[in-house]
Amino acid sequence: MRLPLTIARLLEPLNWISYFIIAGLILYKIGQYYRRRQQLALLIVTTIIILFNSLSHISLNSPYTYSFRVVNNLPSTYASNIDNNSTWECPYESPTFMVSCDMRHTIAVEKMFTDAKYDPSFSVYLLRFFYGYLSSLIGFDGHRWVASFTLNLLFWLFACAALYKICILTNLSERVAAIAMLCCASSWGFVSFVGQPAMYLSAYAFATIMIWSTLEIVYSQTVKKQILFSLIIVSGCLIYDVYPLVLSCLTVLFIFKKYFIYAFVLCLQIFLNLLWKKFFLAIILGSIGDQKSSGNVHDIKNSLDTWINVVSKLNITQATEFISKGTQAYMYGGMIFGVVASSIFILYLSIASFNTKKKDGKSRSLALMSSPISISLLIGSSNKQAKDSNRLLLCFSCSICFLLLLSMIFINPASHHWSPGTGMMPRLAFYTYPINTIAIAVLTEGLMRNKAFIVAVITFLISNLDLTGIASISQFFDYGLVGIYRK
Image (cartoon, rainbow, N blue to C red; front, side, top):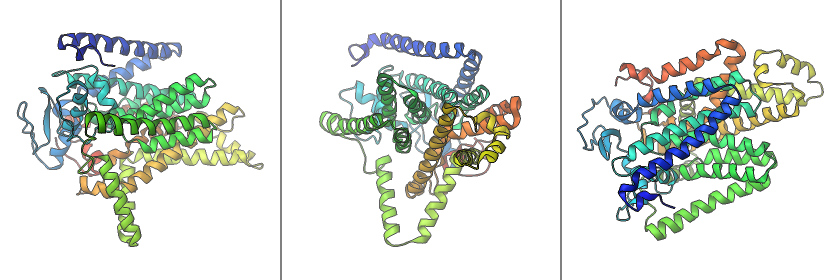
């Protein structure tokens, strides 16, 4: 269904009123939850941090906008309302907001829903339509960037709230949940893309939202609630190519014997994607977009062809390079310390899970319980829910990290095209941030107690380093380049 905007342009205010009412109701529900837990101040602080990080990283200050010219040592030469392909700085309909020129592909997804005469066939993103559809329901010519920006703010806040809820559902301490939520409010992936009217930030947000939805399904006893959260998981598939995340959620659902929901999610996402591609795009629109010269489908196909060629010719040197670069990109995507923290976290959970199953593991379990970290994890607890929580944490941590590592290795041949200098695109591995953030929060809370909140402060400072004009970590995040780069 379309909103009043498509009937007459003068009815656009009704779109915004409807949008703010719906968003307000959702935020009210979230606020009520935090008030019941006596954590309303945490929600307010998180919101303030998100707003600061967002408003200070838009237009020419958006890392994804200046990333291309900085890596090529070019000054900003943006001219009002003119695409500058040399520095890859372009307006988004109006000269007020500058974005990466990549966004000319994402605006096509919005316009195809509101302009019957518009030809979006050049876009590489038509297959992933849901974010563009949501944005098209709100803004129109001249207001599209604002609509996308507000959506990005909401998705960012939802991701942080979902990360908090994950900690609560898995019986982690209130302090761990608070630290994780505050760190999420300054996570670099969100900072990098909040000013871009594209599906990138919402895809990152769904990494956490899909994990939370899966946990709700596992713990829920009502089919109605399970179906609702299944639809949320499927929504992530319509926003971006989050195959490793979907596979991780399906793995957990299968392990915890949610077979009906497992089949429902698997079949529904395949059905909706085929329906959109084969019917709405191919037949109704007449084009599925440019899937041959660029885009994720093109990159996946090229990577697959390259790997088949490498394996068939037993090219050990090339395979070793791809594995090495892919692993390095995976570590950079987690900012290294996040990957280290999640590795320790997984190891600790694995040892604890193994020891509690051994008949002679009582002394070992007691040794684990005596460590500071075990207080946060409830390791050794006789409570069945606590043990299930640790199993869930272990399942998600292992599956997401392992699948993202494999994905980075698999996609590395295509990364050499987009990042010829290093052959890496670390930002594609940022989807591990929910596990990395929880791991950091657990480890620091176990070792530092009340002082552990310093981690959230450090995260904030690192993410705002580029505001000094001296350095930015965008090159590290986007291209795997190590060094100081002036804006």
